[in-house]
Image (tube, rainbow, N blue to C red; front, side, top):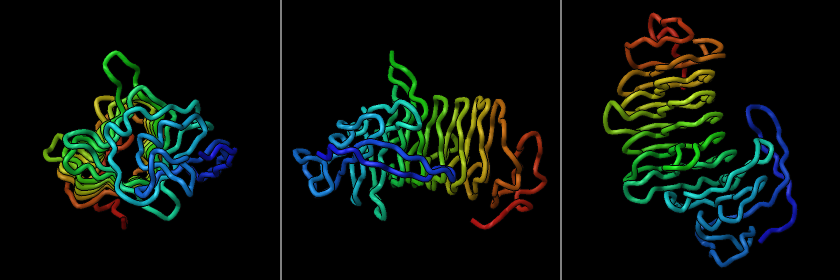
Length: 272
């Protein structure tokens, strides 16, 4: 196990944040009896997350990994300065798949966790990523999903409750099987959707309902979804700077943004 103190510098929304913590590794060629170092990685995500403490990072090498029960008990961080981070190894693209008919990744009762640089392929499962609570437990909150592709989920790409969550630069597509299943279904307050693409989902690209007070949606491209290109239904949204920050096209439906109704989606279309 790598027990020394390492420094991880990450770029989030244009800000460089330096964290101190241990770094561990998971690889499909590893073994859970290993030390979890770069040269002696763990094999499973369950083993990898089991050793994490606030400020620690798990680097995941390329390959396909089972999520679901393997990622059911991710430890919490204590703040955005000391989160628990699960991140793709630089330059590699690990894929997380579900157990049959299960969510690929469930956050329940935990907080201050960063998932960065993964592919979540929900084929054969249910929701891709679910932020929720277990019966009798507390609600997950302050979960950051960034630079991640979420696809092929039979139900929602992301199903989100809890406050303080962030969805940054996501590629969310080809999710859902009917008009009630969406790219992202967000039903809570004080969340952020910033950047990324939401497209070719069966329902809405982005569905914010029944409330989203103090929620920010900006800089997104949502197009070629089954319901409309850009689907926003909310209680209230604050700090959504301009309709021109939102690209949507391919349908004839309009979208309301800060009380403004766009006369034509094509008027605001821009390249993906």
